Image (cartoon, rainbow, N blue to C red):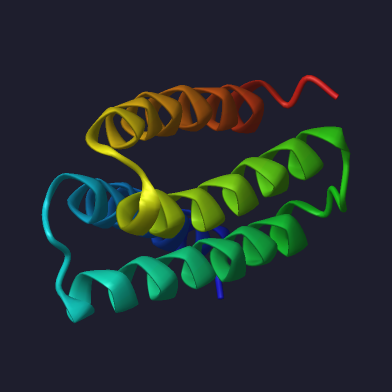
Amino acid sequence: MSYEFYKSLHLLMIFSFLVLGTLNLVTQPTKLVKIGTGVTSFLIMVAGMGLLARIGSGFTGWVIVKAVIWLLLAGLIPVAGKRFSEKGKQMTLVAIVALSAIAAFFAINKPF
């Protein structure tokens, strides 16, 4: 598959993950929202690995930073949705925005 396909899939899944993650925190999530969060999280990784294969960069520093951020978000959102207080959920939303911005910075600039 082409670079453009993987990039489009990666971005679509990131947007979907962020929407579903937000729904997980601000509403009483349905089973479909919970499943969708996990599936989109997995597809983010699959599309990201496809992108890495197309650009041939391997696991450089910026990729490791993005992977750690992805793991943090993929683990934090379901736990926060189930166990955190309302204040904790609000702080998780702030963390989602901040971590997503950091991940975008690393993807765009590839500083190391």
